[in-house]
Amino acid sequence: MTTCSAPAKIYLSGEHAVVYGEPAVACAVELRTQVTVEPASSTTVISGGVPTRIESATYIIEALEQIRRVHPVPDVSIHITSDIPTGAGIGSSAALTVALLQALSIEFGVDIDILQIASMAYDVELSVQGAASQTDTFISTMGGIVLMPDRIFLSHLECSIVIGDTGMRGKTSTMVAKVAELKNTYPGVTEHIIKSIGVIAHMGVVLLEKKDYSGVGRLMNINHGLLESLGVGTSSLSQLVYRARDAGAFGAKITGAGGGGCMVALTDKPEDVIKSIECCYGKAMVVKPAREGVREE
Ligand code: MEV
Picture 1 (tube, rainbow, N blue to C red):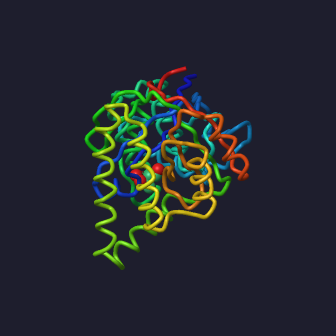
Picture 2 (cartoon, rainbow, N blue to C red):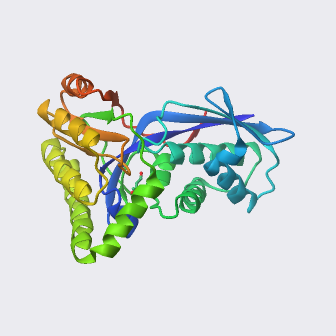
């Protein structure tokens, strides 16, 4: 029996634009999905103590298919527990896929290294979602705070990260397709927006390295406006973003695919930001950056 866990992530900048090759800065956070695997007479999935039909577990089916291309993995029982809210834009599917692949590779002696786990997890996301960048799966595998797609590890954050959850759910594949449709319909406008998001990511790296969180926050606010203009915002997300800013956050924005899910704020007043978000029916939590990516438990 093998158990592995992998972390969630937030984007300080660059989601959606990174799908089109622009840079993004994402940070692994200490919310984890744990996956336990052991050989069994048939493949079963129990998630949060509840048996789940394998046919509906798309990421799991695809992960098993991918790993069986390099090694004859037998039927397995899979137990999942998670602190990561699903479909909330903070990388629950990447964490599940990465933890599962690593647990399978350890349990069955599959000869692949950690970078191959990241790349296989990306293939899983790509196949399930139709379009994806390597960001979610790379960060969940490696941990830390990283400039993508160049894979440059940045200095650790020294301010608080607050995640606010709207409780509503968007689907990554739907939101990625929505941006693609807008880009096809209005290429002249949309391409500039996507490029501007990339500029924000590059500028953000310089400010992050200087620990100028007030500057990073201002860029996050601009990034939020650009994501709104790409059509991935919702009124609840913006309400929580404005509540966080009103409470003195350095900056706040959607994180992940949008269409529901979570926003993220950087702040030196986490209690004030949490109180302000929760006044607005959002659920808020302070999360620590995760230095470690996937690991055996
Ligand atoms: C989803 O967490 C982030 C997106 O940029 C999609 C991706 O990078 O695969 C929207």
